[in-house]
Image (cartoon, rainbow, N blue to C red):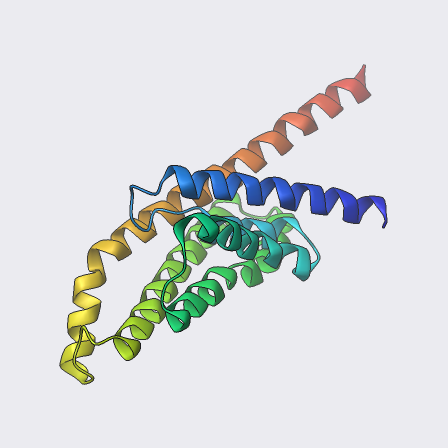
Length: 188
């Protein structure tokens, strides 16, 4: 195993541990979770797709040992939809590498978080509506399902945007501080 792969796996394990700790620590706040933000961040950070997707799936698998399972179709939907954001990470990395507009990169990163929160809302509630007996299997039942879930969407969106800001902002700050230190050492 080469050094880069070992480093990536160590960082991925660290992100999984961080995600599990945050998910367990925030259990009293429904749908406020770091998983989608860490999926997006891991897609940004790791060049290997397998390493990137291990982060959200690892967080869910480990923390669900504590939370327990739920309806299999809904659980599968949650796992798939919380893994999807890693796909956008590579595009964000290329965009940020262009350095032509920090505001554009920040805006698109936030937009990605908003879109993934919306996708999660649409997909999970469609799964709930189609598999449960809580709502009638017609358009009215579907509208009732989405209406009842609106407060959870607010929580999901808030959590995703806060965690995206936290993870990407911390990473940018660390890179900036490290770069300035390197410049100081080189110029001395």
